[in-house]
Length: 382
Image 1 (tube, rainbow, N blue to C red):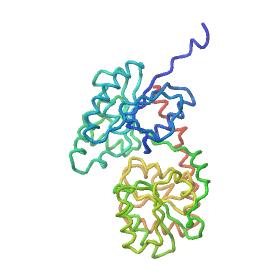
Image 2: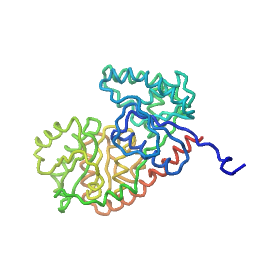
Image 3: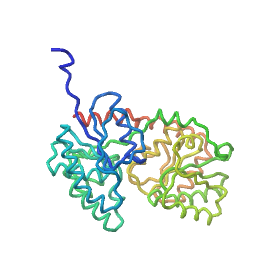
Image 4: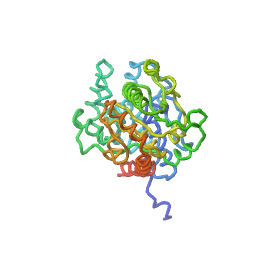
C-alpha cells in the first residue's frame, strides 16, 4: 500500500453566498477561498444564488450558479425554495460534508435544503446585527425576522462575527448559545499595507492641514450626519478637513447638510474607492460614526494602516475590536459633542496619536486572514 493511498480524503465543503458582488461577507468568502486553496486542506465548491461576480476567484475553485439575476424581493423569496432543492441535489451529487452559508438569504436556502433532505451538515454565518438591521417595520423585514427565528435555530452551527451579534441571536432569535461560535471577520493585512503605499492624487493629502477620514456606505446605519455635525464643532476649534469615502442613498442628504453648515470648503465626498487604504494611510485620524454594526471591519483596516481611530461605542463590534478603548478612542453612540472632543484630543496630542497608531496596528494582526482562516478551518474539520 502506497503512502498516498493512506492519505485521508479531503472534506468536501460548499460555500454558499448570494453573489460575489462587492460587500463585506463576499470579501470574507474570497479571502477564505484563497487561504483554503493555497493550503489544500479542503475541497470547496462555491455556490452562488445569483451569477454576479466582482471579486476575483481562485481558478481551481468549482463555481455553481443557481440563477443569473433576481430582480424583485418576491423573486428572491420564491427562489429560496428552488435554491434549497438545487442545494440538496448538489450535496448528494458531490457528497458534501458541510454547507457553510453567508448572509441571510443564503442562510435560509441552506437550512431549507436540510429540511428538504440534504445529507450535509448546515453551518450558517451572520454578518450583521439582525436585531438592529430589521427593527424597522414593513413586510420584508417582518418576513426576514420570522425566517430568522424559524430557520436559524435548525442549523448545526451558527457563526457570529462578534459577541454582540451572538448575544442578539441568542436573546432575540432563540438560538442556543452553545451552538453559536464567534469568529471575527478577517483582514488581509499584507495586501492593505501594500496598497496603502500607493500615491494619492487629491491635493488635500499633499498639504499640512490635518484630515479626518471616514469610509463606508452612506446609509442611516453609518451615522455620517452625526460625524459631519461633530466635525463642524471640531472645525470651529481647529483648522482641519473631513474626507468621506463611500457612496449610497444618503449622499445628497449629506451634501445638503455640509452646505447648510457652511463646510463645502472643508468636506470632500470622494465616493467609492477601489483602494481606500492609500487615503487611510495619509489621514491624521480615522473616525467611525456607525449607530450599529455587525463587526466593523473598516476599523481594523484603518488600524492596519497605522492610523489612530475614534469610534462610536455602538453595537456590535467596535468595543471588541478596540479592547474596551485600549487600542482606540470610544465615545457614547450618537454623542456628537463627545465625538468632536475625542477628535480634537487626537488632533492636538501627537503622543496619543502615535501610541494608539502603534497599539491599533498590533491589535489588527489579531484579525489577520491567516488567523481567522485557521478558526474556520478548525470549525470545518471538527
